[in-house]
Amino acid sequence: MKRKSEVPANGSGIKERTIVVTGAGGFIGGALVRYFHHKGAAKIRAVDKKPLPEWQQRVPGVESLCLDVSIEGNCIRACEGATEVYNLAADMGGMGFIEKFRIECLRSILINTHTIEAACRAGAERYFFSSSACAYNVELQKDPGSRALKESDAYPAMAERGYGWEKLISEMFCQEYWAERGLKTFIARFHNVYGPHGTWDGGREKAPAAIARKVIEAEYTGAGEIEVWGDGTQTRSFMFIDDCVRGIDMIMHCDQLVATPINLGSHELISINDLVSMVEEIAQVKLQRRYDLTAPRGVAGRNSDNTMIKSIMGWEPSTPLVEGMRKTYEWIEEQYRLRQAGTKTEFPAATPDLGPLTNLEPVQARPMVMAPES
Ligand code: NAD
Image (cartoon, rainbow, N blue to C red; front, top):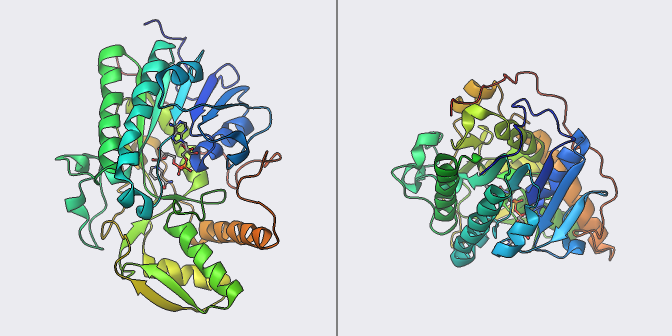
């Protein structure tokens, strides 16, 4: 397969690249499109199966296609002329979703299977896959104080049922496309991503957005209490969206990381109880806690070991949780208020120019990494 001319490893030449983002109607895909648009990318194709009016963000001037990329023919269309393909599409949500809908999660295997093949056939230079910390061995996450997970901890494999196994096998697809067909693939294992424009209700939301919404609801309704899933001792780390999109860009353009899964997450560990306290402080309220011990709670403890990303990039996601949560809380509160006023907010028909993400100063430490001999 003849590949397009090399993209410089430092990520320059952005105007010439045709960048395809799948899952662009969702949280991270939408933010990534905005990030590249702001960075000067001239040819971006945003793809999602949701009808356009339901996209969480839309960037004016970007080609936006409503296509289901679990279907082979649609992937061929989506990847036409692509230089870089970022696969952010998946049927997923927070613990409530991935524990209840394992079949939907497993079926996302079709998305990556067809998208990577189409990207390869289109002669794309680089392919990005959004994996997850759920690919890690659950046996290592049985205690709230479990040590942070390093990349080698995915094997021996005992991933989260459904969602985690789909991620693990899709990672393997990426590695084999590099080994057998020479497609440069890049794999980031995201650890819980949060921020403005994320899902905040409806059943797919994750803990930070769910807790912010519950605190807002309690405040506005005067309920005075909050339901917490599990006993609140479970621990996680949460990465702010700005760090996530920047990390994706850096990983995708680091040839040392070809076909090599890497953590992309914050290492600021917090218990769910402390996260509730943090949001209460932001909102300046104190609520009675009601623990639902039957609700999905996921593993007991999970954190990101960032030794690898720091040693290769000289960088790691570092937005303080309290800072990111304040921005997230304010955004969700605005959505909540608008909705109470009868305005449909969460799926704006076409988002006006949203400007840059909140934190886009250039990263200083970004060593050039040479491509491996091939
Ligand atoms: P999201 O649900 O907000 O976005 C995913 C998007 O993919 C949705 O808009 C959905 O409509 C779209 N999609 C689903 N099936 C599709 C299909 N067949 N064809 C086209 N589009 C389809 O999720 P997100 O938080 O933006 O996550 C993006 C990626 O990052 C996913 O692969 C997810 O598994 C991964 N990830 C996210 C997190 C997180 O905390 N958000 C953590 C780990 C991994």
